[in-house]
Image (cartoon, rainbow over all chains, first blue to last red; front, side):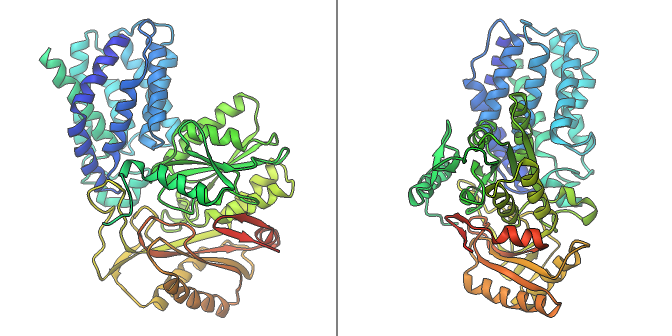
Length: 203
Length: 333
């Protein structure tokens, strides 16, 4: 993975953003404000505008982290920025990330998000998706296989948490009503990976 | 839902522009003009108090920038925490060289952003403390009170911390004053009707015409029960009963009370609630000090009210009585 591939992934996501925005807003509306999609759309606009350092993947990820933080003050946006920044600091100075390093850096992102957000694994948040993806890609050596494993892991995690309540943040206040609802953050990860896989399959 | 706006995306910025034009003691600052600060800045040598939060709740949060209250405030989009850079700018602008207290509601975005800000400023050598408002008793059980969210009671924490800072308290003193106000303040709300985020295609929640929700939060968070509308006296009695059931173990016989409109509920109805609430408190041996009645913490056009009780000791009574001034709240000796 190089800065250029980050850029491609962001463009892929941006193309799908109108649909993602609508569907995420609808999912979030069941738990409250109905603005997660709009918030994510602003973040993606910010990511598109960020200047990446073609020679330094770490610096590029840190620039994306900053862009996410500038775009929103929401908890999901902050967690995205935390993850991007944590990985960026880990790979600072590297021109690229090898496939066999992905699981480790996703683990670093997961741990940073847990610390920043105060949630636990199993609370039904975006961090459960990142954790599942980190585990699913641990044996990967080829990017195409990794993309597919990550995509499946995100979808499987979403399914695995259906029937379980959200136990943190504003959504926890909806109690058992959240058992049948997807967490908007988990859903966002799954939809973003859908978008990337869909665009890559056209290449 | 009808709104007097121009374009949804400009809702926050145009509102802030109007607020600061109407009240020139407040100044818009920061890269994106999402920081409200005192025109004269923080007095040198005074502990700076920074807050921050989403829009849609005026006068909270940024309306309480003023003498004896908070010094700066980062402003987010409607019902969304302020962006990290606005929080950092607001905290830096609050710095008078004697340390900074971050006094915010217990919401994920604000908590995370101000945690980042604290780390950054501490790395730069500044002293920073954080106190979270957690007064909404319906937002988590008493056993999990640290998870409760900050609502109208946050203004008592602003008042206590602001007073202590103005009189020259050091950062620990100011933090302790805020923490004491939080520990002794409880709020419960009742929702009568929804609000809608500008640009959204539907209200944040739906209540039938004849329904109310006891314990509803300031973003329409679910409360304790939803049922048919009842007379104001019955609602006031339940709210007071629930608040008193959660009084601190060492509560004395004096309380400060805020009867607050969530936006659409008029003063007439607030006074009807206040009349019953005050009388019930007196019947139970409480003396109500400095009652506040009005729209102090709102949710745009949401209909409903909240009642906040702050259980006073001598220190809090003194801090709440200290002079303070902002566009929406003045205390004079």
